[in-house]
Every structure is written in structure tokens, then in C-alpha cells.
Image (cartoon, rainbow, N blue to C red; front, side, top):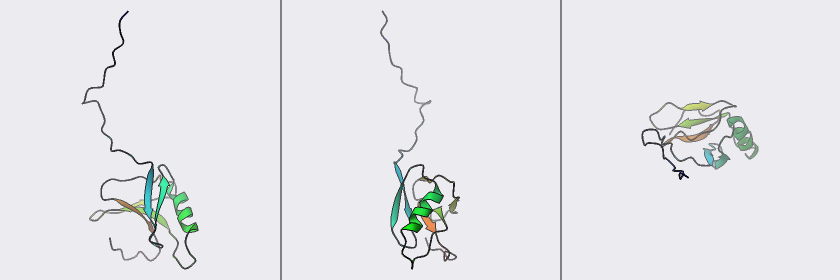
Length: 103
């Protein structure tokens, strides 16, 4: 009887994806706190939870965007899945007074 031999895929066929974390972090610009959400969370749900934890004196979040110095920001719609865009990218909330931005 022949013995089964496992064959590994050739290096050219292997995909090298960055290690993923089970969560994403969103900086709340109103409170200054960082909130963690499970990977796959919709942006609208995250905004609802963030706004629910704000004090009455803090501005509510309108949406979430990814920012990186020197790059154009990436806005997330309510049904967008929150993801880590990679090195240097940060997720944060957008509030109504964000007409002038400082990164």
C-alpha cells in the first residue's frame, strides 16, 4: 500500500497576506477614546455604539474614515465593513466641526 505524501504549494502559488487582527480600533475625536470593534463590524453600528457612550456635551460622530498623513482620507458608509488599511492608516470618527483637519 502506498503511503500518502503531503505536498506543499510551490512558493509562487502561496499568497502572503498580512496577519489580521480580530479587531479594529477607532479613535473617537469627541471623547479622545479609542474603541475596539470585532473584525467585520459595520461602520454604522460602530458609530451608533460610539455615540451612545458620549457625554451630552460631546459632539456626535457623523461617520468613520481612515486617514494617513499625505494621503486622501477614505470615508466609510453606514454599511461599510471596518478594516485595517495597513501601516500608517488610522480609523477615526468625523464630527461636524472637522472642517479644518490636523493630522
